[in-house]
Image (tube, rainbow over all chains, first blue to last red; front, side, top):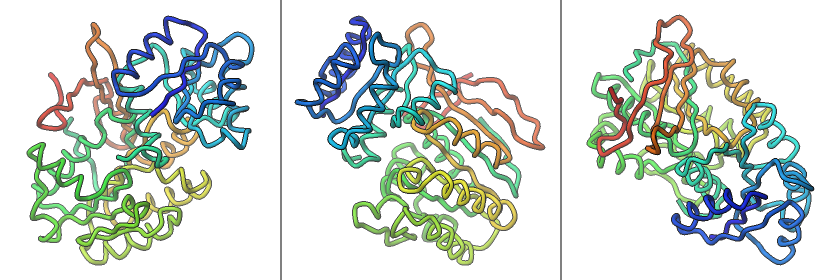
Length: 127
Length: 220
């Protein structure tokens, strides 16, 4: 299983990478929305973890573009953000059409269980 | 957390995946069965065989209760894999929520009212049905549970739905409970609280719990 990380902060990507690799996932790192969209032309991750607050195209806009593209719309997107208000979460689900939301600071079990749940219910990974 | 849920009542329990909602439901089921109550377990995230196996490993064996007629599974999970559960009822297509209502009506005719109904969980059904359909289904089932069947507790995954959905569901039930992960000095913690229970006096503070070898356990 391959996961694409999208976050402009190298420290956050490192923490996420350590958690995900320990859980047995292969990780692709990207550092911006633009970088993510470019890499999706050649890579096909099973799930994308997307930071909201990034310079350039923010996470919501990146998610919207992923979900608006026939080639990538089926890839589950989880927004990972310090912005945990209900309005922010609503924007993730309604505007970004995301599949999940995990708030920072990242709690390993919450992140892994959310990923596993989404992969399982979408039939991407057996239960 | 020992909560004495009244009859003719409905409760929603939400929390992130893996936090312990399933283990909490199992502990409720076991305590109800031991008290001689009838239980209907509607499952959408694991098969009845998995549930019974898991319960046995936790020392909460459900064996014998199905044969005795006090426990009935409604399987909304296996249809996706083209399987069915022979000892209980299998939903042929969870994209048709009316089938769940009709099946539950049959189950209740078979075992008789009142019963305790566990619906674990609502979340996968939102993948196959639009929000309006799910809200109507939830309203209808909750009304039936309260007026005819006796009691229902639903679980809902947090972080995979628009918060507006959860807020709508909370509005339609009598009680709401929530679970959370936390970190205390780098140690993972799990917390449960009663947010509100209409007509019931309850402590609404967060309480730590464990999911261990014995399943769900409150920590002192």
